[in-house]
Image (cartoon, rainbow, N blue to C red; front, side, top):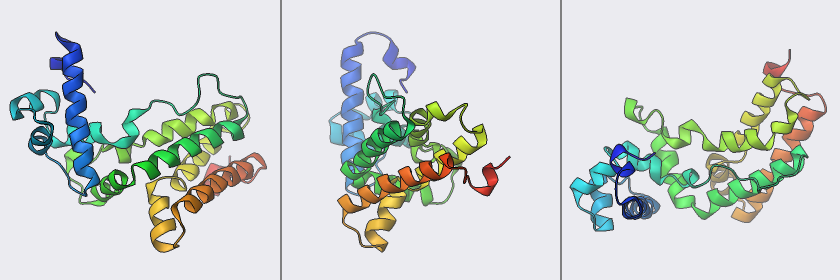
Length: 206
């Protein structure tokens, strides 16, 4: 989210400065660090005063640096109508983002599991950008299934396809990363088939 400072004058230059700060923060996160605004400013060769005009606190910086903030949709411009095809596209793109940014994702996961200071309750991982992507993929189901069933299905698919699932499948189950991604895609489709054949979870039944 842009600050008021960014909306006036020299917008292109300000955009480049924001991008430099965000990129620096992502590089620091990739090392397992939890960068402060000052640390990102130093890494980006930007003054601390300037950096705080873009990110007033560490939380704002971490929110902007989260890998999942780079896309508002994972569907192509003219997506198919079939929910299974749409879901396959979204899950493939989402799991690839998770794999390509695994170091950052793991750091964000660690942050989300730490003690609950009020300023961290809406970290992007907790807000769930992926929830919106999956909801968009399953939009054709509205009218075919009860709204509660669709919502439960979205949550079930998200629980089986994010960095949390990747960590368990690779660190605990011992799968290779590409095998883990294939399994996540299979699980997402299995959950969709289960919902379509009349077996939603108990909490979703009328």
